[in-house]
Amino acid sequence: MGEVIVVTSGKGGVGKTTTAANIGTGLAAQGKKVVLLDTDIGLRNLDVVMGLENRIVYDIVDIAQGHCKLKQGMIKDKRFPELYLIPAAQTKDKTSVTEEQTRAICNELKQEVDYVIVDCPAGIEQGFKNAIAGADRAIVVTNPEVSAVRDADRIIGLLEANGLREPQLVLNRVRPNMVRQGDMMSVDDILEILAIKLLGVIPDDDSIVISTNRGEPTVLDQQSKAGQAYRNIVQRLLGNDVPLMNLDVEEGFFAKLMKLFKGN
Amino acid sequence: MASFLQKLFGNDKASKELAKDRLKLVLIHDRASLSPAMMDNLRRDLVEVISRYMDFDEAALDVQMAEQESMTMLEVNIPVAGVKRNHGAEK
Image 1 (cartoon, chains in turn red, yellow):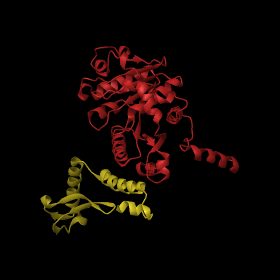
Image 2 (cartoon, one colour):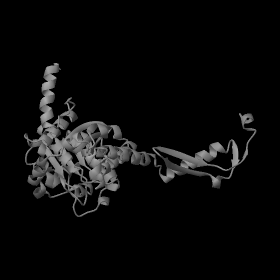
Image 3 (cartoon, each protein chain N blue to C red):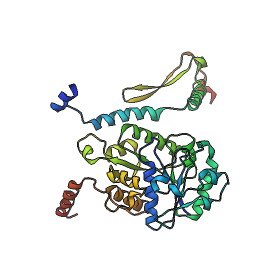
Image 4 (cartoon, chains in turn yellow, red):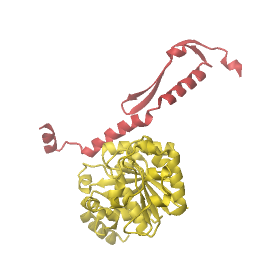
């Protein structure tokens, strides 16, 4: 029996889709069987982030309404044999799918794969309710900005009210230089405010823009810091204890030296 | 110009501290907000409990959430018409 993980945030544009794509691809790279489920009906994007936009025949609404079989709606990834995408519908609206239908799709997928990663739309309306309906656990994505953290707090409350206790946080777009100068909230600042468990921290990284341009998830880019951060998150999801990476290059080196000298 | 001078003389608070302070305040308010349905339930329960001890005009009972500096207060105002002296004897 697989696990359904919903990636949510409240606010738009904080990196939900990028996070869903990278976690899903990263899990597939570790040999897991994964389905990415885009529930952002009307504003689908997971297909272009994954570079699979040309392969779409059916979408989540077709599956929910029985126009095609579940297997027919699962688009095979180019890179991994056991990674699939179920795209959102682009021309319908969010009421085209109900909570019950989404839950049924998730439950059916769980029988077939190790992980179902659900990309949730922004907002707290029907699309959000649909996305969390079949979820076993939740990942909340936020940025170190007042608006994004405020919305994350609201989402955490709603997740808990819907039985998704202990959601985990992905803090995206951290800029270490600004944190050091006191002009950006640090990981600790945000954890103190949200009182939530941390899953990982993603540095603001040009490689995300470049890989999105190409339709290649950053998690596969061995040179990218953001890619490394996503690989660490994947390891944590698999139950491995991976320390937070040091986002600061220079300090990272000195910190390592200091550790050597201190003998720990 | 003012902010430039502040920076120049180094008495500018780090902007992340401002962000934190503002967030904490706004979250106190966000987290404390009850839905109208919950407010109605609270009001109904308050009427039930308080009417065991006092006589009052239910319509005049005023329940609201209020902000006071960094605290959220539940304010309940009840004009009391009289106290029930016999409450202890009911048990």
